[in-house]
Image (tube, rainbow, N blue to C red):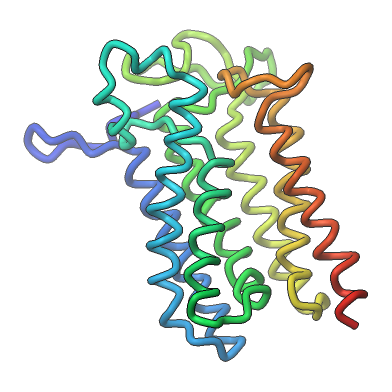
Length: 251
């Protein structure tokens, strides 16, 4: 597609960076909105969000470098070039969530309530951020003959050029949008603390597990499954606990 969205003089502005930043800002803004509705100190959301974003970027890049270490052997400084793409969402989700929650815990905040505020924002952020993956060509899909297949032609694309591929980046984006809409509807019915987060983890895990079968980029292997699918099983289990088990223990 278009890895470089536009240029300011000789400075290229990468599509990936623009959409990733927009997704993070939107996630933060929506979290503030949800926190305000719950009468939580919503001004903490930007601080927790920045901590989570920075830690998430480190985690996402670290996992990518671990999976594609051969790309950086001859030029290790490229590890820092995150604006060109090369982040693994599972790493971002894990590192970002833990660091953000540790900050909120240090402020003696109700973690499950905050998680329920954060979950819809993360889904919305993924919807926007994955468009950056599409423009950059990362997270690309397997070859396909389906009518909605896409062909990347820009030589700067991270996806194979000249092949009709599953637009898995858009699958991820649509999954995020669907999850966001479901969460907005479900929050009117799910009253237990952590329940909305549990639903998010279940929806995210199921969608991600399925989409993984259409991905072609290397993401590590554990038998017949990818490393990412292994992580989604963990997230799914946590989601089941929060949605169906935790609420009964708290009753």
